[in-house]
Image (cartoon, rainbow over all chains, first blue to last red; front, side, top):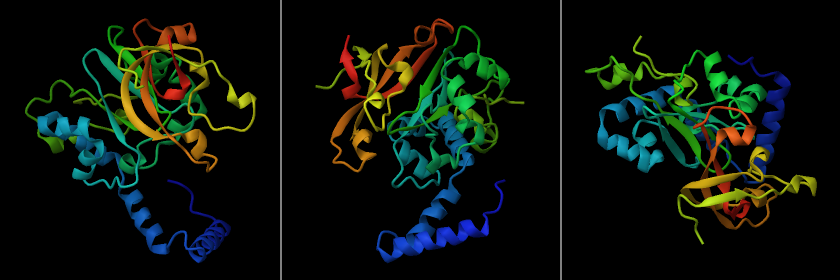
Length: 194
Length: 93
């Protein structure tokens, strides 16, 4: 967890909000509403989207056609967020998401990115030596599978739809969602049926 | 003119950051590199203008696919890099 904010930071924020309110740029209510949306975002919503896409072909189609609608249907608030693109892993292709320029990440859906996603090391290495980076995560991708690194550089935000792991035949969506971690949603890890 | 998927393109070997302050969404490691249009993503306001609060015309944004090993001179054959690049950074190849 992050350290609690310092009193001087809170005082500075209060002054900034007061100045913005005085100029009619933003209201306290708008800030509170945006905060509620941000607080709601979570990898858990992404996990439920993946599990439903594995078990519901119509939802899979919706997810590829309109990421915002698919996310809203599972409880995220996407208003004002950049378009959500979904990268479908196949038996012959694995996607890995990185933002080499900054830290683009589907925040409206998954919340704030983990610290390593923003690190210089991950941003430099993922695009240059993805197999070495994945190996350090304990994620082994066979040589016969293409690794497609998706450098998130502009208006879209990207989420990986991992492959449904073997050994999960007959599982329902809630049980499947429990296998999908935050790291699997950007492709550094794979869901495993323990 | 919108480029269709499969079209071979080259990213301009241009370095505006050497000419003055700018905001660019085209990674340096792809300047001058050859790739293929994978998908048309839509039309979006040019971030190079948005960043400076200038009037920002809409530009077509493409998903462009690159073979990974030639970019770095290392890596596994068959691996790829997929990147969002605006039309004004692409030239026919």
